[in-house]
Image (tube, rainbow, N blue to C red):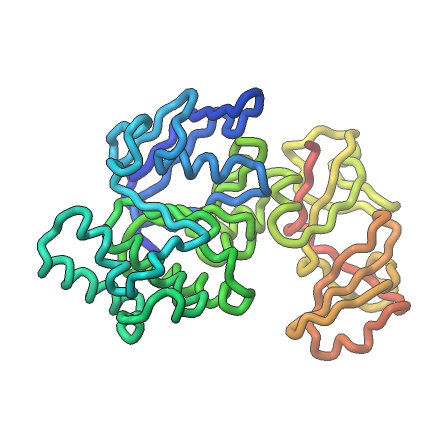
Length: 353
């Protein structure tokens, strides 16, 4: 785990950005720490890319300020900011070798040739590109191009590196490999990374903290464990991972009631005798001995290698509940089988929004 300084390296203060009548970013405030891997996560149109472009300087906020290392950069030109932006398209120079692509930005800064050569060699080693140094982009695979683009962004030693959907063009296996590679490199070079993504798994795997955005606002900001295990509202709960939702109400007894069942979940901060929604993840529902839990019937099952996802019809909701069980020995549970379910009450979340 990275060690963070207390003072934020980047401070976004009540920023607003409008495009005509559309409010893309709505009074958003955010502090990002030095040496942190931070993810902006949300669906298309939530404002995450607009926020990244304002940090980079390609858009100017209508209201609010942006500070980098304590300096106001709100209206500073992009090329004057000590940060770099890596695009999804990579934008490598096709006529240049890998070495030349890495050296180009340093040459534009008019650094001495020995320093340029030393920094290029260092970055080639850090990103494991020595063997590809004399190749041109057309001779590289997708993952290799991604590493070159990352190395070119890092070689200028920015205070903050911005990544806009950097892995979106890669296939699933390569994307998973590069997620770990990005995290490793970020730890090694010690630079703050801010990544924009709509891929929840990508954010959970790589980030130290995640901000979930919707309609230009942050709904929740926390560690991957916090946003996954303790979502702040129904939108976050449904957007991060797989979640079962059960409509019901909180009784005067403080229990959650649905389908003739009562659940002793944490409802202390919620109103009594009101409608509510119980949220529980598939891995927090267990199969119990017949007759000892909530009765259900398996209507479908999906094999995922290490586990199976069962779809169980119960009286609790119109939609079948998703239940994750170990694949070993689970082949006896087939569609049509009667089962009993148990709930981990400590893992349930209750929402009234």
